Image (tube, rainbow, N blue to C red; front, side, top):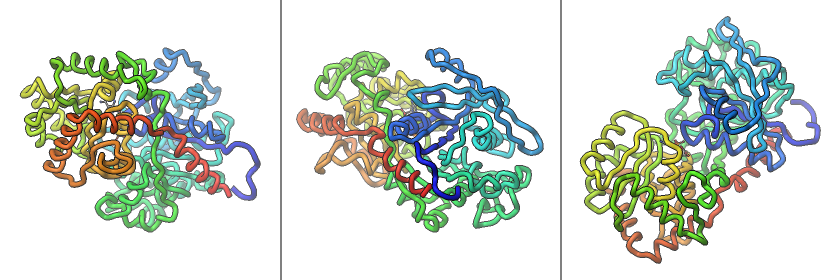
Length: 487
Ligand code: ADP
């Protein structure tokens, strides 16, 4: 991008494998669906490219949004084969969204169980389709903002692909790490088949312990790297938190920054949330009691004063299930109720299911993805439990704070940046440090003490509810980053 840019709004394309409300596995979807519209309000011409996974187009039509089919298909050649997708455009919350419709590539599961040269093809296609957008959509971004490993092939292609490297000067790239634990690692031989130059197959580029690492490629090739909280930005540069990439991240630390995620405060708003049995606010909290009663009914629990700890999230090691499961018996003995909504690793689903069978009066588990039930858990609980081993940002604690449900968290990553212990000046939750069963149990015991003290409890709830968790805090930081890349 030589010379001075013309004036006018910065043109920024976000690409993401998942984006709410179209498709969602976890927090990445929330961010991809809410950051670009927030940036538009800060005068960048942001747009989004994402796959139309199974059912997405129908649900857009059901919502009454208009879909326009672009006259030209997106195309990419991968391993001598031409892949094509119909491109649909819709405008959601003021954001122009391009949806790639190709049922052979984008079916009913977003992430493959095992990544190999074949199962990676949808993500290669998604990445390369972004470079086809000037042809398909007649709109050329100046900056392409990639989210997580599934879009990492784009910066890699601009750097090392035999054909696409000639477009390198046309774009600036930003790569956001939403979770360093998922890097997209494949056999090194895939690269030759994809048209990646041999000079990418060494240690300073995509090579990673004899394999090809897509995220590593993006970290090397992108103009800027962001991650989703300041604390996590530091943690990933330590050997303990770097998932094998700490050394590389330290070597590119000049282009790494941690920018705290926000939430869509219009969607996550207890005052207007249509999925709740009653609405409420800090000023008029009566509806929260109705939500609590509804949660108790859902779990089949009689109403009593025992505190309810909600959990909503993926049942994976990252979220702290290895310390939660051995703690369950003690937590039940302490008088806690646990309302768990989540799905993930079979061993954790099984262990939680067994706990629900053993203590039906204290443990409720829904295994699966359920948006309305998640809203009820956020609104109807007294506390929200997140004993994460690591947490890049975490959105659930932000949602629970906004819903007046006190977070009990391990102080790590974005949790350390957003939840402060109740003794401290900005206290809005209960915090523990060690990743142990004992530390978790102690934190829950302290939460129970808070629960019994009505004044202390109300103070924490109000502190949580009054804070600003919107993108308005972080959108200007992204806008400044974009501007700096084009200077
Ligand atoms: P992560 O991205 O690591 O999964 P986050 O806290 O950043 O965790 O975001 C998780 C998002 O996914 C939240 O919006 C949460 O409400 C939602 N979520 C996770 N699991 C479920 C589930 N089983 N049902 C409904 N929503 C869920």
